Length: 604
Image (tube, rainbow, N blue to C red):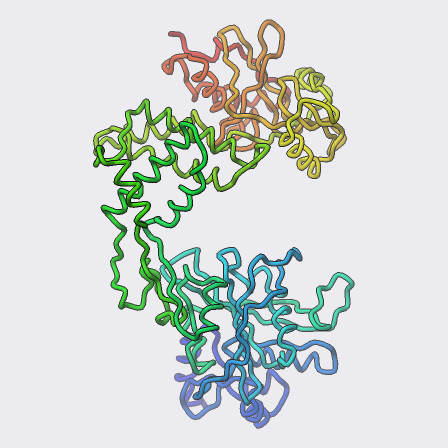
């Protein structure tokens, strides 16, 4: 005889992402009688699924956890809870911990640079919700990759926790997608005594086997706490704001800088004592950008009275911990703008030639200040590289000439690469006489050589990856590392992508044999090797030959680029025809790519 409640049960099972279990089904899973299921629900060991009707339903997750705990009984393991297994309460759970906590680490063991905002809510029923949040954009996903470190660190700071009745939850900045300012997730752990020497131990326990849950709405935490926890505007969630709110109990007013006034004033201070054309250009660009935003500030499409941050991020409730106040140009900055553009109210305008000259200045400064140089300045590199695109809107083109803008931008990116240094690894087989000749040109250096400090430091860092037999310079005077990672000699070189050999029609372009991986395109003149065609900055890590893939395609692109840089007319450069030569399948059967430049050019 059919059960009259079967249609209702089927509807419930379709509605829930993971269908709940009836008391009878739960009893069967647990190996107990149905009355015992009722007792476990009353004690909180199983979680009721509130689906209506007369039958008792429990969540499948709570049944799984009960089974796991039963299997471990008498052993050393316990299992923490998910947020959904924390009972819903009518009265607020007391806040039992609210601090910026130290001692948290990344999974690598490196201490975190910023403290973690750690809060916990407890109650008379013994259940606890521990909420962690990062006070830096770098500390998102605290319960994702570093889950065990986070939960273990929190439990060490809260030794009174009954871990079998505790949920670890993370409030994360939602920086990946959507308009929501925050995302919520939790992780459940099996907690054991350490058994391995390498276990990271927290108060005598290790946290293992995290199982993650993500929540569609941060507000899902509220029923389990009985209150809305204090949140901060995402751009104001930092250590100073949290500390001030904890000290005063009032919302903290935080400057909000959508128009970049504070950023530009900081950048102007960075270069205030520096002289030269590039720094004069940077000052003018920063002041002109300030002038533009003073006249046309960014506007929000949502009024501040709505439950949104002024930059249009959505919050589950109005942030109680901070208030954003829009910043404006300081009197000093506004005065500097007025003085600079008193006679030029329209601001900066450049011809295409002036734009290119300015672009080259900024690129040189950015490259000189990057990690590849002897005294890198990351702030200066970021300022110079970020200012390059600011030149293009000031180019003296008509507003509707998009194609001209695009062509100019593409050409400048090509001719003045922002990251012109490439690390290139070339293994050399003994039967490849061309690459062997190239290898013989390697010159070893000792501590008193002409290698610059930044070149030596970078080669030594590469040596940790490939091993070091010697450092020095290759045949073409580029910093190089000699190693034998697979028993074969190999050179790892630091290649400047801007150093393109100037080709002549009688020059020969010769490829290495690539049966050991990506190889080189060497240039020979009058029987002597004179250079190597560099990689293209936007392509893959090497040149290969003999098939219809990216390696031969990249080789053809690099050859065409070298031909253009050597002054050959565009009408004579047929990249598709060159690609057919680099893709010729005979090159996979032992043949070598070897062509005179004139044979790669169309007849004029």
